Image (cartoon, rainbow, N blue to C red; front, top):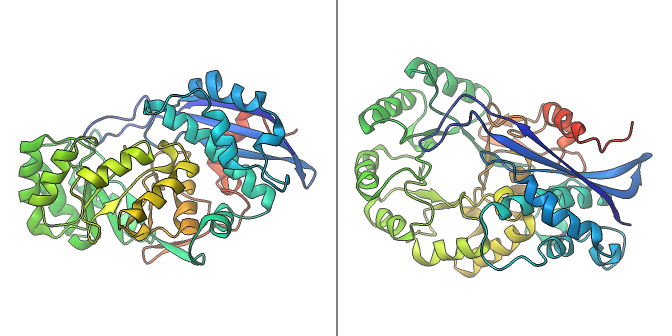
Amino acid sequence: MRITDIKDLTLSTGEKRSNAMMDFSDMTTGFVAVVTDVVRDGRPVIGYGFSGTGRYSQNAICRDRMIPRIMAADPDTLQNDAGDNLDPFRVWDCMMQKEKPGGHGDRAVAAATLDMAVWDAAAKIAGQPLYRYLADNYGKSPVPDRVPVYVGGGYYAPGRGLPELQDEIRGHLDDGFVVVKMKIGGAPLAEDLKRLDAVMAIVPSDNLAVDANGRFDHTAAMQYSDALAPLGLRWFEEPGFPLDFDLQADIARHYDGPLATGENLLSMWDAKNLLRYGGLRPEKDYLQFDCALSYGICEYIRTIDMVEEHGWSRQRLYPHGGHLLSLHITAGLGLGGTEAYPRTHQPVGGFTDGLTIADGYVGLPDIPGLGFEGKSNLYETLKRLGAEPD
């Protein structure tokens, strides 16, 4: 079996909302299709991938560097030992040829986009949902029937006051979510505290997380830490610049509540330095490495191994992303829970259509691969790649 073609597409996916650091009005998302010569039900098996949520398309890197390496490779070198499926690790090694160590940046997103499509294809060839394929080959525990899920929201938007914020939160609770995350840092502290009070009138504080998206310098981080400490929040996410591990360690010493970070770290090595120098507490804090932004599943498996070597449980990993990839790796690799973006970051945010969310848990899709074909708005976008036969 072999990869016969790889197609790519970049689309505008902008939305009128913002967090503490950026607005999403000119956001783009990259999509890829990995076409194989394996035929199921009279159609070639196609794996799909996209460039994560809240990051711009990096398809130029895919198109100019990584796709040509895959397409030029001897097909036998990309297969598993049995010769009946792709080996995602071998494909990953192939596309990363001639790339220097370090220098992650946007390259990590490009590699993850292609990696996602390869794993989608491999699971489809195996006839399994990706979470089952991962559990059988790389997991350590039985696949659960459902996994914990929290919803990301509470963005800033023009004309959006406290009543609108409360309406959004009520909608998430009606959808079956229990734990809710909202944005802070995009307004003065006094205004953010009013926003928090409005949400805590609806959601108990221990089910409410806050996310500053790396906004604060040392002074602001300490001011917010002091203001948030009495509230008993679920966690305080990414208070400072993602690579400022000294600041992260200072906050961990100062703020007794749970912290969460890691979504903007782009490799296993970045994650290792966070655990070495960031002062995080394995019994209390959360790690949110985003598979779709950090070289994909191959690197994520290496990251999980490293996390466990440092004395952390993989149950402390709650991957960022809010999409089907994060759901599958959470279930298949035995992670603690996942994020969901059912109303934002479209068309990639959220899960397959009709998937049950209840009491803060989400069920799992029973579709081969990642199940993109069961998410109508995403599948319509993927078909624009032109890889599907007429």
